[in-house]
Amino acid sequence: MPIKRAAIIGAGIAGLTAALALARHGMESDIFEQAEALTEVGAGLQISPNASRILDTLGVLDALRSVWLEPEEVQLVSGASLRQIASVPCGNFARQRWGAPYGTAHRATLQKALLEAVAANALCTLHLGRRIDLENRTMVDGIAGRDFDLAIGADGVWSKTRSLVPGAPSPLFSGNIAWRFTIPEASAPAILNRSSVTAFLGRSSHLVCYPIRENAAFNMVAIVSGSSASHDWDATGSKAQRENMLRGFSGWNDAILHMLERQEQASFWPLYEMGAGRWHNGNDAILIGDAAHAMMPFAAQGAAMAIEDAFELAGMVATRPLPEAFDLYEKHRAPRIARLRQRAAFNQFAYHARGPIRMARDLVLSLRPPQSLAADMDWIYGYRAIG
Image (cartoon, rainbow, N blue to C red):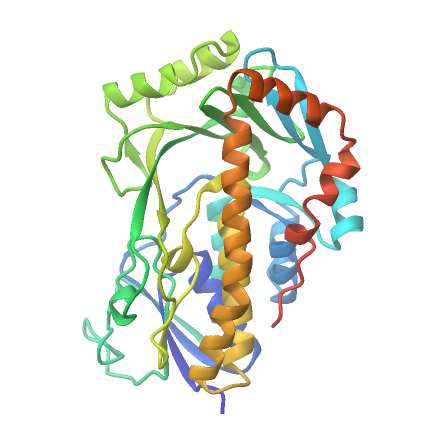
C-alpha cells in the first residue's frame, strides 16, 4: 500500500517538488526547514525541458512562464577573442524538439512558484524554523508528535538525513570554486547577450552568463580552480581568493576582465560533489537531489535532477512497498546520474582546454551545425520522467 505521510527534510527545490509529487498521488507530507525564512540564495538557474515538463505536470510552470526568459540559444564563445565557437538553438526549437520549454530564472522565482503550489495543496504542510527527530520520525520544537512512514532527505550537500543511511555518500571538494554575482542589465557591458545563455571559455576557467528577466539582470557564474574555505552559498571571498579568481581569467578579453574586477561582493562557492554510496536504508529513509548525488554544474542539470528525483520517487512509492520502491528508484536513477556526471566531466575538460586541445575543440565544434549539437542533448532534454 502507498504511504500515508512523509517527512521531507529541506524546503529547497527537491523538497518542495517531492511534496507536490507525493500529493499528486494522494499522499500527505510535512516539509521541515530549519531556516526561519527561505532566502534568495544561488542566484539564477537554467530549467531545461526535462525539468520544465515535470513542473508543467505539477501545475507550476504557468507561474514561471510570465516571468522567466526562454533563451534563443546556448552559445559557446571564446573568452579571449569573443568569437562564437558553437551554439545550440532553444526557444521554439526546444519546444518542438524536446516537447517542453527551456527557461532561465532566479532560483527564488522557482522556489516561490513551488511554495505557492505547496501552500495551496491541502496534502502539503510546510514548517519553517522547525526540526524533526530523524531517529523517531517525530516533530520537535514544540510541535505535537506525528508519525511518518517515510523520511526523504532533500537537505543538500551537507545533509543531516544521510545519518539514517548506512554507507551513504560523503561530500568531496572538487578543486573548483564558483564565483556568483548578478549585474543589472542597464549597466551590463555590451558583450553580454540579452537573449541567450552564453558560456565564455578559457584556459582552466569559464564564465556562464544569462539574463534573468524578472530581475532585469544578468546571472554570472565564474568557475576557476581553488581551495575550499566555506560551506556557505553566499560567503564573500577574501582578497586573496578574489585575486586567485582573477588570475584564472588572465589573457581574457579586457571587457570581461574589467567586469570581473568590479565584482567585490561576488559570492564565493566551493563546489562539492558526492562520492559513491547508497541513497536509501532499505526501509524508510531515502536521499534525493544534492543530498544523494551532488555533481559539478558543467551540464547545468543540478536543479533538473532534483526535480526528476522527486517526481520519480513519488511515483514509485505510490505503487510499491518502500523497500521495493527504493531499490527500483536507485537502479533506475543511478545510471542516468552516472551518465550526467560523465557529461559534466567531459564539459569541464572541453570548456577548460588549453593549447592544441583547445584548437582542436574549436575546429570540431565549428564544423558541426547547431541541429547536430542539439541532437547530442536529446537524452538529457528529451527525457520523460516516470511518475
